Length: 384
Ligand SMILES: *Cc1c(COP(=O)(O)O)cnc(C)c1O
Image (cartoon, rainbow, N blue to C red; front, side):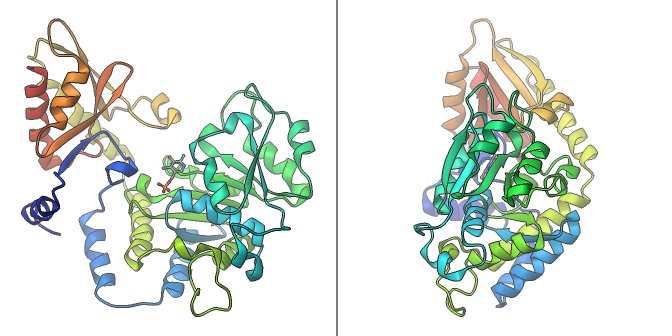
């Protein structure tokens, strides 16, 4: 691994200061950090050439075996995964259709989405050549409404897993049961459903044809992810992805969604490590680190603090593990906005989240060697 001196100097040459990320896993902040072991392994991959079609096929087999799914395919992230799943459902293995996507005419391209499931990444459907058709109202969608929306132009139903528990929306199992007589594929965006581990295979186990995941959430590359699915559905994804564009018969849809061989291998290795990781220990370590930071700030008069769980995932928050410290201004101390600005001004700069009027210091993405610096900066910022 590069020493921090080298790392800093290359960023300095670019004029981009190093960031101590106490905010969490976000694409704009670089996703996650690859482990030293994975970094070393992909160094080996980088040092020689290999066939990308072979890497994709073999890594897909490995991932499917790891999670107990029928088939899998590495893709460049979950957003690309949505586009590729949709393109696969439109082309269904037909290379002449793949060549026309996302503008194929005369093909069924409507993707149904429960109105209550409207979310940021639904626009990736259009990237794959589909059109989102919302069904029902904000207050709910009935089985009858969804059934009546299915027609000759429908190619799939999209189900964002993180919105699965929303009141008055139909749960995945009901959507799958409803789609089955129409032989309509159900696509799941399970981008951050990689913890608890048993979630990973749960969507395809419930009958979804394809489910996509983002590698950023299991300490993989920011530009990685994978799709799980049935063998025929994954074969359809394979037929539209970036491989064999030059060597095969079709100028396939997915050519612009390509990956480095290091990304493909790192995605597989990161998933393997994630599945083998002791997650109870991971959470216990967060709690210890949060407590250490809390103690180091205890004498500041202008702050009140409370350990908390900062996550996208309400189900994890319910189990109440701790990975963050919520800091609130009290007395005559600086306001949270002022503190955020002070933290952003340093080099390295520090980024925390703001939530519900508090400054949230999430330790999950803070390198242990940066913890002292983080404390120093927090103390300086709260001292005004
Ligand atoms: C991050 C995220 C995505 C996009 O994943 P990428 O791998 O960054 O493309 C899609 N859906 C949800 C719910 C996400 O949180």
